[in-house]
Length: 445
Image (cartoon, one colour):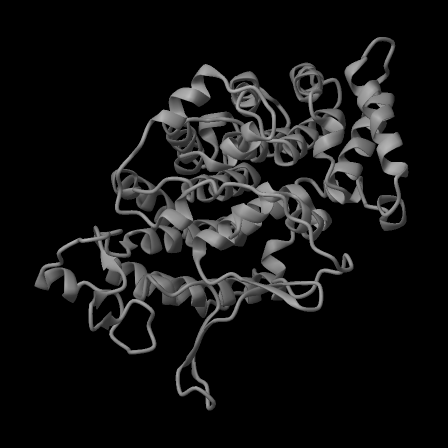
């Protein structure tokens, strides 16, 4: 089931008892397998420059502007020099004797910069657990806010570069304790993001994924009180984002949807636009996941045919000669009419308290979210306008341009959640890793 982890193990890593157990287990669900699996990685390398093209503004963000500390140097990454520097930084990071806070911060900054701008799986292979032990020590001691956040970023970059089945058990308890007990809001927020990455790539079981999603939902529903961050928007936003990221791994969320929807709908009334947008995107994801393709040999009743999403012939879920392409499996929310009204208000909200940028983000985001709630098989940036050439709707227009010729279509909410989750960690190195890192490539097939 956990294909990304399986890829990492096939590359020469030791298979733990936990991994063997997971590989032997199977599950049955009506979910969309493409959206809910960790895809098997393969060696990926493509020629081209490192230019990154079109990408919506909403996918570009960082934890505490940490990307400013680790700005990449393309001329350095293009040579073999980074391998020598990386070896030195790894040695510095693992050997903490006589190290200073400033020295560790410098070593972590360089380590992150190199792993962001270059794919260094071979260079760190076999050293992951020693590196992780050092990162966890920096996180546990919280000697400085900067060192602690850098250690979390380094941990996340290590996992995306070289996924390991053993890292989750080592890191998750400390990350959750840091989220709950740290007195620093930036550290809490960074720990939430790192917990999401660690859960996704570090060897968590399905039960552990759901347990962490429940933990994140408690943060959201309590407005941060659950982790002693009362009415602080940053931890609530990060919890919403990582909940959505992890939700893409679970095939059937029918049992979790009601509580999650109640929490997310409540957050639509937040005074912070970032909280509102993150909650709205999770709502769109849950509506999307409530519709799945018919399973092989599934016999559909007349009511199932009536529940095929959409009624226009341009909708990919519209009924065909052989049946509906997508079928409603359960009701995502019991008061959809009321929800649509709320989403419509947010899509047209005008308030002097909002900046021009926030107003634009709210209008754009909630127009998409409302469209998907009304038509759950329509993804982000869906355009209803009719093309004069094809006579059909343009459909989802969100795309990431990979160099001059490559285009990644983000036509489903689960894809947008994964794209955002990866860019939170990889920042400007996303294209490099998408080209060369099979784990990243298969996360967005």
